[in-house]
Image 1 (cartoon, rainbow, N blue to C red):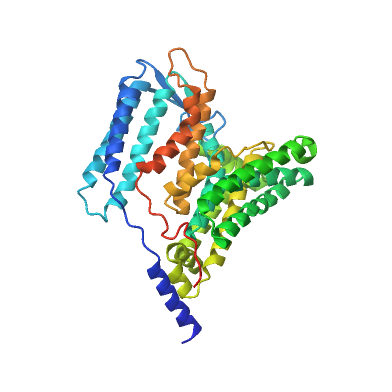
Image 2: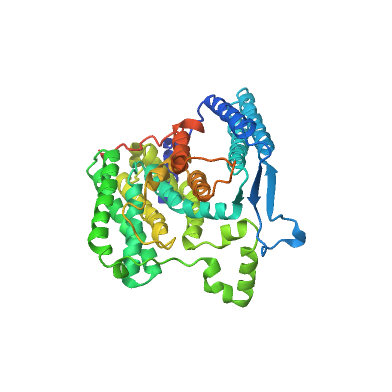
Length: 458
């Protein structure tokens, strides 16, 4: 048999070894959405502030706004808008109840848009209630969401790469921290923000080497290894921060920032600059999309490339086979443990880029434990995204939006008679969202069959 037919035959065997995801029961979802919808109706709507208005800032004075079609701000009655949005959320919940009588294969196609409608309506009802007698700049909120999403998305993608190959990656927190540390240190030493960008994934790979060595090589329990590596990362970076960086911050910890498109030299090029300035002045989405640094665009690119690579290439088929049925993969000649090694290292490098966003991406000097639990939120985003790059990105955007919202609400001055939310509650908002999401609010997730299971070649 020639090499090509034999390879095709092996791919067929591998495809059979990859277990398809089976949809789970969704009866819990209508119950949850109904309860949340009633909470929104009662607390955000019926118990709102009578006569209060909520204002959303949309466009700025210098934004591109032909014929004044897009208003600079939208003001709505808080109670009326919150009640209307709560009713929409309840209608979406009723649609989910009705969907239970449909054939199982039809549910996912119709269910996901209904969930999206419910989520948007519920969040808008909450926002309308909480900004009663105040104003919220939507453009700034969304731009901050994109920035806060970057470390979460890169961390989640790191988890997707590792766990699709069968290695549990709890060490995302340490990888983000090492990436932030490496970007700040190398960038400061060489006086180049681009050197810091290159160093971040390389330094984060050190965590990946240790994770792969113990989890794949020595077959140590993978969750324990990940937790230990996170503690190690906090300890070693805190040591160098206290003994080296803080002693001479001018040399070892200089704040520097990656340029954005709006602040780059592109705006000075005649034609390109005119187009870029036009794009930047588009209301709401202009600066959110076109005034970001290279890490944001790398995030979009890696999501696209990784999605295609995992689900449309022979490499991706082999990776998923290793994570689902390593024995079958080994039978057809796939090197299981080397594949796991390479995926863990690649995932660590990706997480390192997310760590770079914490320092050179935002122009902040490195600080002790500055990842501040983002690695665990990224892990939740990976699970919520069902181990899929696009799903992980959407989940990361959800958590980033919650974080951005709590930052905006925390800086608002509570107007007389306005809604006042304790600052401690706002600080825990992103983690509450993550807790409810991973606990099963949006459905059960099927983990790769061999995730966390060491493989011994026989």
